[in-house]
Image (tube, rainbow, N blue to C red):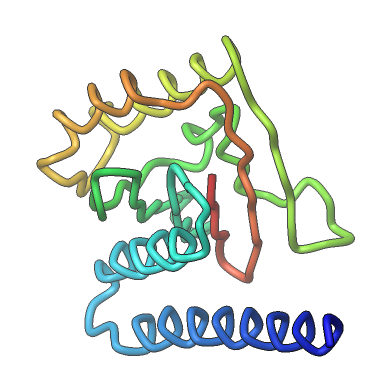
Length: 171
């Protein structure tokens, strides 16, 4: 009887995961403009929260190598979709922005950061967001920057999933 119950729980969890994936897919397919990618990032963030996890961010990075640009559409805890930013690929060298997959044998990469390294990485990241070379940053980003610095967790695990032309980052 216990085994049957366990199998049913596993099936229900799998259906829940499939439904979450379908909601994200539906949101992505319903986009009318590329700027709506930030709403897909928000949807991903919310779906992960539904599983009892506490993500800090969900980012979708779109790489345009011809223009040497990374446009990052992001949603952060307590802020919803914050908009996007476009910077040169060279400027994106923060400790947790990894444009190119360091492991060609898989399309997945994980980075764990904590303490001073994480704090410095966050500071660098936020300085990039507010830098003069940044384009199309949401007006709400200024106040969010301060809150982000003050409320950042002590440690984070960043999960990257790479696809042709970019990556999904959940931390």
